[in-house]
Picture 1 (cartoon, rainbow, N blue to C red):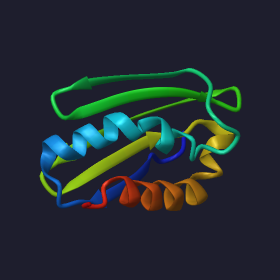
Picture 2: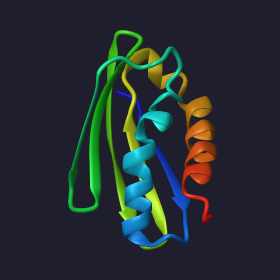
Picture 3: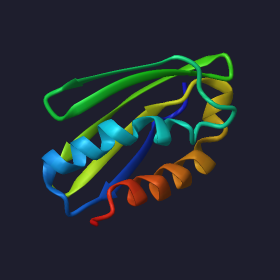
Picture 4: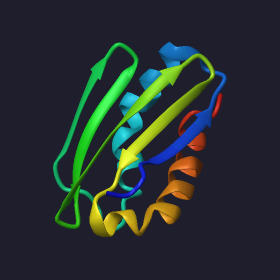
Length: 103
């Protein structure tokens, strides 16, 4: 199994606003998986969003932890998806910053 993909996205929104934006924009972030995604499952426990999604016939799992000044993302990419980790990391960082940009 490959190493998990980790991304930290800084923000200045506070936990409540960052969590709200993530909840509303989660599917936008998941579309960064090459080949698109099928079924997506997500659930919040405190300030952790756990998720699983099907992409290219494989299931990726992970979680996002929302803290005062950042969102920490960990994604476990199986098999072929693991080979795309570098490209995916950059996309998640970029889209995460857009989502959490203070407006």
